[in-house]
Length: 433
Ligand SMILES: Cc1ncc(COP(=O)(O)O)c(C=O)c1O
Image (tube, rainbow, N blue to C red; front, side, top):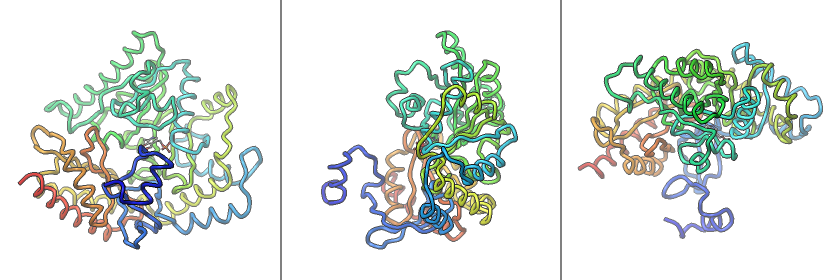
């Protein structure tokens, strides 16, 4: 695969060979528009993977807002400026009234870093509970949370994991209520382990959509029970909305709203500036004021007028183009199409969906649910060859991850479903005949 592509060779020479790239044949993308990406040869690809260009690649409204503000003023936040105030007001208005203040950063990792510091400062504890297949970012403290594959998570003493609340792979025959208890007991075990080690609890941090875990079908009642146990032990609930926020899951603006439990701290990122690097933390005035009084927070680029102009334009487009309603309608259409494919393709073990976010879990056997990892990789590459971009996640990379820009249409959905049907057939013939 490697060696014949001059740009790839130059890239590896200057940024190293471990910087991850998608696909057996890496894509050289030069332009984006809406749900489409264009390669250097002018070929068009349907983007069913990227959630950062939330309102569509290069949305003119966002591009214009960035360009105008960049041509007027860009400076840090130690001066008064309307944009950061307007944005913080509009953003916090989208949350429960208890979550009334915002802080800004430049990446999801930084937002989670702030949340950790805030929770640890507020509780006086160090212990953080995460899932046993988590990824929340790349700073040193946040890497400790990365039980999925981050090396720091293997040695830290201040992070304990609970079993991913996974209805598909969990113990069979328990029913939702007992399954929720089963996983809440796993959270309790982490709490007890910290107590036994003499480490005070600071909180639990998870993505309420369990996106990196494979967009899990969480047993009803689990989040309520888990958070209740953490709070009873003195910890905070930190919801990582870096992937699930801004209406991705349809119906609600924030994925934590599905369970109806209001977090103590929410972290935001990826789609917030449609690709412009802005992230944030939303919490109560009490938490944010106490944190600020304890240790002055300043972040040179965070919340600057250009970043906030981009983020304001994203809110405008979500509202004006009614992208949550689109996520609900087109999402339901895609979910139904995926379930039809499941009926005719034995490779599909499970289909999970929330708004415009889909997980298609590939298995070799419906009973044992053995992960079809090689088939999943083959399928992702086959789809790319056919001009549709997807990826795979999960413990064994066996879960197709479909998460397109939000203005995805029914026509786009038909192209996705038809291509998937075709490629599933090809991969099934290749591996299972
Ligand atoms: C759930 C979640 N949280 C946080 C992050 C980290 O965000 P960033 O890469 O912007 O630092 C990611 C990135 O993939 C993520 O998926």
